[in-house]
Length: 330
Image (cartoon, rainbow, N blue to C red; front, side, top):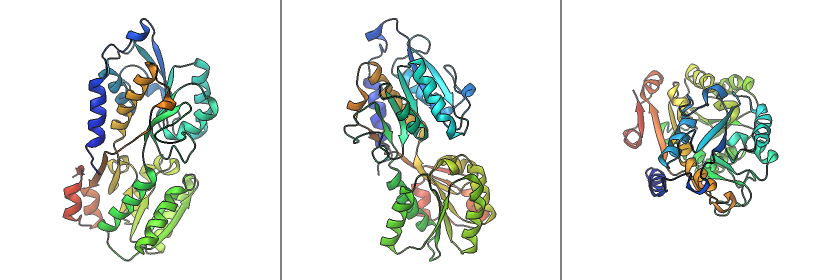
C-alpha cells in the first residue's frame, strides 16, 4: 500500500483549486457545521480551535483560499464522548440550516435521521456503503460523501502485523465493540484461513473492558488486538493500562493509543483525512452535489511503534517492522 498516494492526491487537489473561494457567491458567508465525538464545543470554536482535527479541516480550507469570517464560519458541536448527544447536536445544526456539515463517523446515523437535504461530509467513515450512508463509493447518491477508512481490510492487516510482531502459537485475544461486529467477522475469516487461534472478547460498554482483558490472560493469550469502536476509543488510556498490567503486546486501531503508552498501531492519519475533507466542502459550496462526489479511500496508512512500551514488555521489535514504521516513539 502506497502511504504517499493519499497525501499527494490531496495536495494536488488543494493546489489546483481556485483561490477565489467566495467568487461564486460574493458577500455570502458560508456556515459549516462540525460534529466531533470526544471534544468539547468550546475547544472547537473560531479560526484557531484547540481540537487538532478541526484545525486540520480549517487548514485545508485556508489552503483552498477560504478566509475565516470573510468566506465562512463554523458552527461546531462536540459530543464530549457521549454518543447519545449526537441526535440533539445534529438536530441543532439542521435547525440552523447550515450549508454543509462535517461529521465524525459515529455521528452519521444521527445526521442521516436528521436531514436528507443538507450535504454531509464524513472525514473517515468506517464502512459507508455497508452502514447505508451511501449507495456506492463511486456514486454515493443522497446527501452524504467523504472519505472511508476501509475498516474491515485494515483490521485484517493489523492482525497480520501483530502475528509478525508476536509469532507464537498462543491465541490472539480480540477486543471488539459489539456495535461494529463486522470487524470481528473480518478477523475471524482471516484467522480461519491462516489457522490462527483467536479468543473473542466482545464488549458493549466500558465496564466490561477490564473483565475481558483479564479473561485474555486467564486463557493464556499471547497478544491483544484492539478493534475500533466508541466503547474502546473513548477509554483508550484504560485499555492501554490494562494491556500493560496483564503484559499483553497489543495492536491498536488508532495512533492515539500509542501516544498514551500503547505498543503499536496501524491506521490512517486522522489529521490528513480532516484536511482532505476540506476539498469535499469546497466542491459542495461551489455547487457540486454530494451524491455525485465519489467517496475516497484513505491510502496513507501509518505504522506507529512505541519502543518504550516494547522494552517494558521485554519485547524485541523485528527489524523488518522497525524499517516499515512511519513513526517510532522512543
